[in-house]
Image: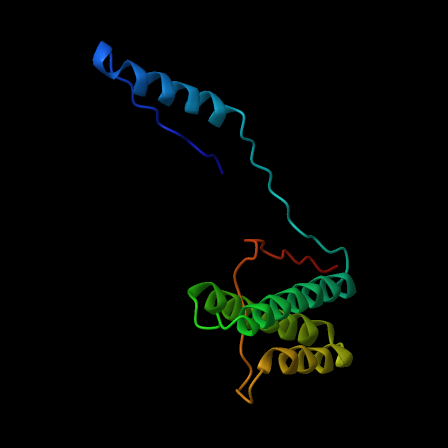
Length: 137
């Protein structure tokens, strides 16, 4: 994807300071680069390990927000949704690969995110805005 910035300038002397500031901002924007980073796994085992790491990171972030009394924030809800989506991906991958131990790990990760006796809470969203790409061979 691309990032675009539109700089508006005015030719009147009255707006010269704003125009110079806008052009300076445009120059700084030109220095910004975007990199895409996808976590790709070479095998089902690697994919499960990547998902497990993401699940633990989500659970850790949720615990941190809840520990500071910020469990009701939209960011925390997005983390819960991301966690639920990752758990679903893990269950699907485990089912496809027939890994019996994967199901046990999912229930363990779900218990870590459960908290105060609630049903399995999901966490999604990110973190840092990273999507986990999984490729199985």
